[in-house]
Length: 81
Image 1: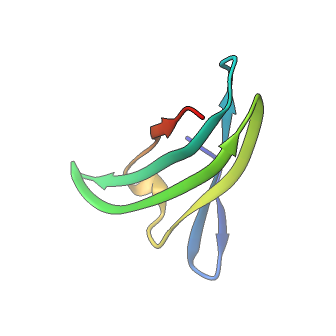
Image 2: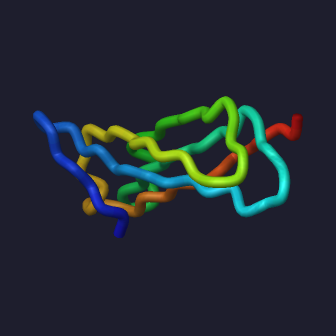
Image 3: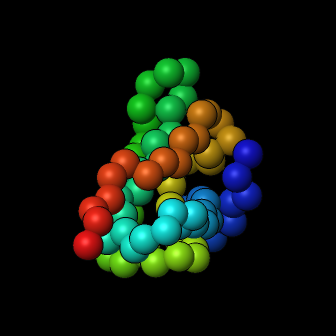
């Protein structure tokens, strides 16, 4: 399970996205989905404008504890410059 931080009833799930390719990516679209008993309970989106070689960090924020279900974080799309 991804580590999480709880602040005032909100569950912050930090992420790191790493560009291991040889080029730069633009408009990197990330999606976080929390499913409980197979049902989508919460979802969030992030966009990273520019990702060269290296990594970027951020967090998804959920109102439900991600340990109550199946949390999936993924890169949904990106553009090449």
